[in-house]
Length: 212
Image (cartoon, rainbow, N blue to C red; front, side, top):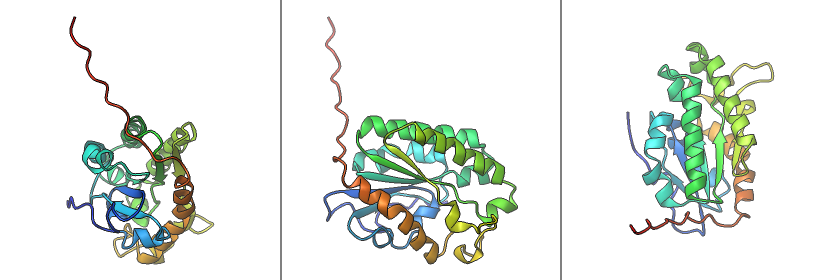
């Protein structure tokens, strides 16, 4: 599995603040996140292909905390389900990510993009676990001031719950360019609202007390 990150969608420089993307290939393969999010903010795509929630958590310091973004867009969990991990494990890893982010960068905005009910997930029988994961995260975000659950299910399904095949590639899991444009439309106002908040500051590092 690839572990490429950074560079896609523009670097952190050139704007007063940045939107950082972290998670799996659904985000890594986004062709133009900066443009689809409105073009006003630098974007830093730190997502990496094939990642699970545990791997994103392990990479968090280098890929997220050291880069001190204003907004973090998180999409991960689909690979957990595809590799037999349960909704509970994926949720617990995300919750740890969110708590660490809040502690290290007070004021940062975390946008959790709901795991997509793709045709591939349906074929694998993963939709019940997927729905459980999304609901757990929805409840978690509802109780926190710095985290939003962004439900994108309506973008990818018809009113009767069937997937929109024109938005998925031939593997029935990854997204076509039209899907990313729709995703950008949903995220754009959330990102703009975050831009009106004070810039996050790193939590102070307390010096160890001297021995008596």
